[in-house]
Amino acid sequence: MKISSEEVAKVARLSRLDLTQEKTDQYAAQLGDILGYMDKLSELDTANVEPMYTPVNQVSVMRDDVVVNDYSREDILKNAPETDGAFFIVPRIV
Amino acid sequence: MPELSALTLSQVRAKLADKSISAVEATEAALARIAATEPKVQALLSVQAEEARALAKALDAAGPDPAQPLWGVPLVVKDVLATKGVPTTCASKMLENFRPVYDATAVAKLKEAGAVLVGKANMDEFAMGSTTENSAYFATKNPWDLSRVPGGSSGGSGAAIAACQAYGALGTDTGGSIRLPASFCGIVGVKPTYGRVSRFGMVAFGSSLDQIGPMTRTVEDAARLLGVIAGHDTKDSTSVDVPVPDYVGALAKRRDLKGLTIGLPAEYWDEGLSPEVAEACAAAVKQAEELGAKTKRVNLKLSQYAIAVYYIIATAEASSNLARFDGVRYGYRDTDASSLIDMYVKSRTRGFGEEVQRRIILGTYVLSSGYYDAYYRKAAQVRRLLRQDFEAALAECDVLMGAVCPTTAFKVGQMTSDPLQMYLMDIFTISTNLAGLPGMSLPVGLGRESGMPVGLQITGRAFDEATMLQLAHVLEQSVPATGTPAL
Image (tube, rainbow over all chains, first blue to last red; front, side, top):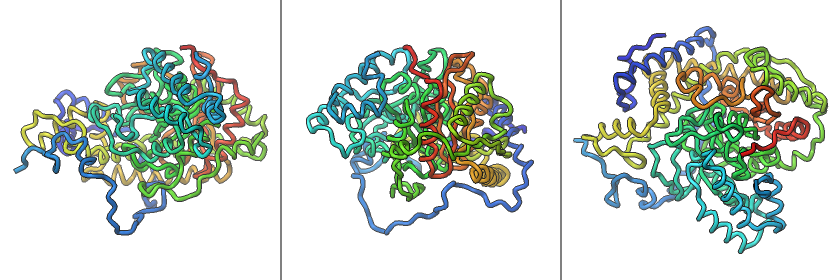
């Protein structure tokens, strides 16, 4: 299964990673091997099989719509790379 | 080694409870053992000596509390688990200075039980790896042979227990990350049923695969730890609300293995095992038969597809889970960046190691438009078929048995140049995570050729850890003792 360096570069942009050309080519080769291995799955007939995304049966576990304040603003900002004490500060977007 | 360090968790727990030793003595012994062995083993990313001493002193002032099943017991916790106010790095540069503002539920439960947490264990970065060589800080060595790997991704936890630095550890297992290091380090490691232990506070890798579990020197020790951390948690909507049995009490109820049927999957025995692993595991099975168990050959016909399914699902989930690391609210932020997007890109590129980036790329690819159905959806369908395979086998047997890994611990650097080769080491462990079943590694002796520990894998029915632990406990008394490494 060949995966091109262009495809790897596109996926890298999607995942917000900046790869050198060397890394891009290296990943293309390695991922090609790995994906080739995964092509085995096409041998199996899964026509009427429901996908299993999780081992547990419960989905959409609900709770009462009640506000619970578990953490203070100070806690939440504690690990912030940059803060003014009220907000997370980031570079301008516009 | 100091006498106190050689005790098991259950033994030290009893001595603490009846005041034969004080919490301060137990903590000082652990800290001394850590100081003596860390230069060689490098199991820990951080040691909380002052916090541990202060807690031990406070515990002694209050006296042993029979309502606290781990009163005064020094333990270690894998650095993927949130510990309030204490560094939690996931062995990544991305979280080098991160200190959580809360405890993971499993950690909180250990503290409520009176345990003294002495250190955070090294691991493969963000739990991605099988040897702990992917840690962004340093590699941990196998205490049995310092030129060999301890396994991964909970390699620090495995090595810490094998080196008797603490009496028990929490590891995490997404594709074998408790069972493999337990096997390579000659200790017991248990991955509970998915949903048995709350994942709240465990930095997520593969949310449908991850579980926290105990790593200890004996089965009884593991049963004690599991009993403390298991249980429903409203903070984890994937945790299941089923009662937690008395695992320790269950151990006493069985003296032999009469009435139990052990399934031996042909796909796990017929080929691929190194001779020394095959020999040690086959001898353990023979012991089990002598103890009264019936054995039965079964088939897990879809085993050959498990790795493909796992690496599609796990990387897809990881690519989603790791999207949160963008330098905005916590973690590494690159200050060279010229704009917000550039900040995301630079922070992630410089903060994440190579294996993590590789898996993010792979996961993003299999989820991307045009490929989603061919890879992710297909893998999820095969996942259901894999589980049905297990359910069929476990309808006829109480547990399944095989080796944890085809080999014993290999040399440092042996696998790092070929990612696919590395992934194939997980071949016997990953199906258990895909199916959501409980699994464990039991040390069954040293390999004839390498002299390194061999781990037998036992897989049980969903939420039936009690039977799995009972069987392991009985078998443990009969197989050759693994002992502790001379460090």
